[in-house]
Image (cartoon, rainbow, N blue to C red; front, side):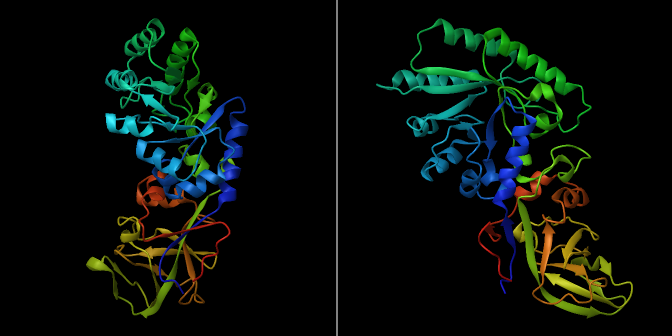
Length: 369
């Protein structure tokens, strides 16, 4: 028995979810977003499984360098762009496309290009702030940079297109999404540039966001990007199933306290299981009593506070449960969205926050408890 958590990654589910994206946006090219170690699923293995994508998008230069070091040769896009001359130098010869979200970034790239004796072609995407209020150029800034590029003899620098990011696409009824899409599309059409808008929610719920390039993230991993809609209803399959074994089964008396702070007391004599997972593994410490888990295909409830290494669960409805049984925290049979809702967070956070103590097992490898 391995007394610790395992995240089983179904690479077939990744390929299935990519196909769902293709079907939703058949005229779009796809940047598969594999930032944050592929949302906690293992960047290298997920890149291999998502080979049918047109390219990969990451948040930071370091992630792009890691993919190139793994031998990944597909087009790469760095969504935050390069922050320094050091980062620019690192990607100079690696055919990595960079997002430019400020005039300062543009000047940094241009300066680096001019200083290099034989600069290679550098493709950049201008990011337009259409209402996200985070990173991005105002429209007047974007126009100035486009005109500057087109009116001067710059070193090898190619404007690959425009992009923007949707602020409220998870709510299909929110009017802001249409306004953002309209603003970005108008500027792209004015300058006859390729356009990238759609994130997962945009791809699935907003036809106007299905632009020349789309950037699916959470949907690739089988998480729903839409408020009030399950992943299964959207045709998505969970890629991660997080499990850990029961390491103890105890019979406790009525009134017995469970866990730190004695926040839960047994209302009657009851059978309680202890599972080898806690906030040290990335399971949310603030998960309340009642948060569901699966044991032998049946639901059980979390009891008391989450510890660093353990949680306690109610086994009264599963009398046959025994030490060594795998317990599903989320994944197949227990949607991560449901757990996230209980905890008061989002599926993205639960998937991305797992610690290095959780062993990732991909497809052909079988977990052994």
